[in-house]
Length: 92
Image 1 (cartoon, rainbow, N blue to C red):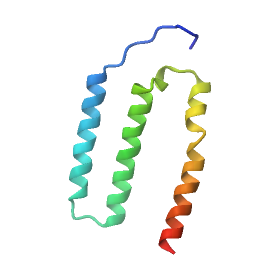
Image 2: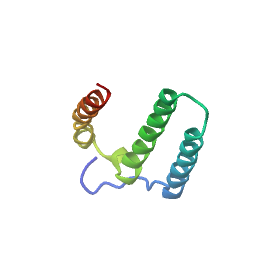
Image 3: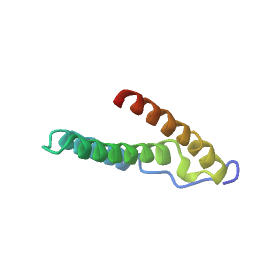
């Protein structure tokens, strides 16, 4: 998108409501009698979903060009590597 180009204003209250609902769902999942592995996977998926909502709408990445999206996504592989390294150190 070119500099100064207008884009549709996101409905922040709707996004906030989605984030609130996802938080309530996370609280509900935490108290379900599921195995820890299933809870972890579900909570991780919900956290990623919430992070994407924040990044896309509150950080306006939805309305940016591909270059800005690449800058935002580029650190993710390093984050995964660090998390895996820490988890393997903790497990072993």
